[in-house]
Image 1 (cartoon, one colour):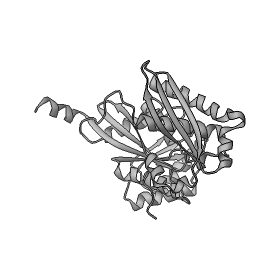
Image 2 (cartoon, rainbow, N blue to C red):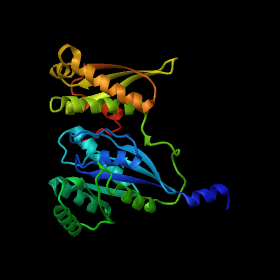
Image 3 (cartoon, rainbow, N blue to C red):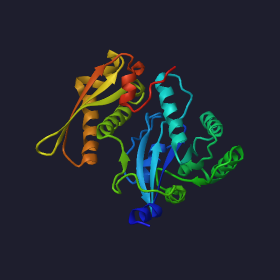
Image 4 (cartoon, helix red, strand yellow):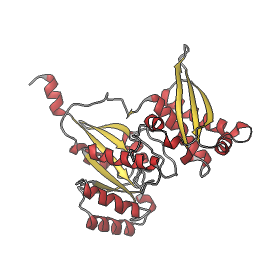
Length: 306
């Protein structure tokens, strides 16, 4: 056996899809699993729009986590594209982890997901999340009800926020990875272009700052990325909204709102890149951007055919 073959036989590598209803904690769990922030997290549902890969190593296994959008009953084309991306991630993965909000109970979205998993002949790992927010009796009752409803490969109780139980889940998943060489360098935590990562950072700040006024009618695109001679980076981004009234909300009085969003985003980008960042953030109106296939491509989504 050659050294390359011996290394391949000794290592494991596979994909784990994280699925669940909106706000179940998938992005928080992904960040906890990889030991760093690779997915944006807000208190808003449907924050994640496209599939994002986070990478971690446990023993000899490289686990590639696929963070998917929350699965819910879609109404708009963007909703359909997001849900399609989530199910696509589950279909392509070696293992699927169903994340359920323990504090939220057995919601209608959860039942629809269970039915979808059954239809796809997927036996997931169940992770009951946010156990720090629910009494023990309720956790045990939910676990029993869910295991009566469907057969799971294994059941875990975790808190993605505090990390409680996450290591046990990671160790279990590493044993399920198929034998094979690692697909990414040992120190890589995510598989997403830096331009897209920067856009996601800014979109997170838009969500956190504007609450109910704007998020679902907006998107952010990185239009220019230039490395300067002094080692710093110049980044130009556009926050697209659908109406002039939304542009005024995003700008704020005297431009204060967009300035605050830009400052917060720039600080996170500098932490990510470990270099000085010059961020120029603009707000533009693009009517019905949610009907533009090109915008979906920018977000890593497929435009729905119907």
